[in-house]
Length: 211
Image 1 (cartoon, helix red, strand yellow):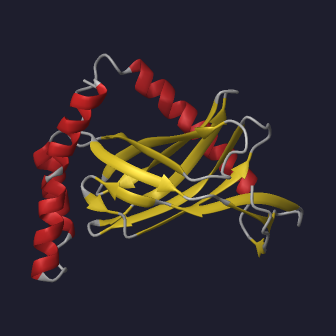
Image 2 (cartoon, rainbow, N blue to C red):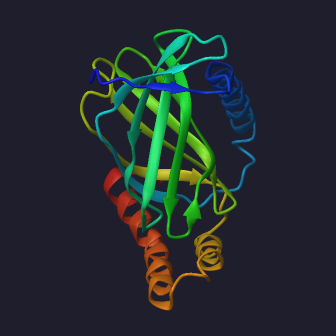
């Protein structure tokens, strides 16, 4: 990994925050697993994202102890819309096989709220699970990288992000309601790009075998 470092004092306790995130995600996973049979199908958003090599830095916890952090950006598209700005911060957890952090992501339709990351490693690969709220809907997607030298090279992923949208029409309506203040030309482009998500999802399902 890069050795560039920086000092970034932080008032909140990142380790306690990561622990809360881990517990919350575990609870969400149990709930989702229990209700998987009964849950109605959700409408996914196609994503194609890249994480450049991460930077290693430092921050201070509540006890003024220096902790390592990893920072980078996200580039690509989500739901047919280009990512305009995105960043992520990850922190090692209590063990070498777990960690957590936060991320931000913004498209022409708005930004992801309460974005956080759960990071796990199983010896074969390191997986980052991204969770948040986008356009009022639940959003969840994954990006995986190598188990060793994680973050030393760019990582890229394509897939279908789980959401709580019920249908394409609901997603398109949410985007349309989110862009009224854009100039007319930019608004039309954003709506057209979002409308193309259905085609992207169908094409991905056809090539990957995903139902």
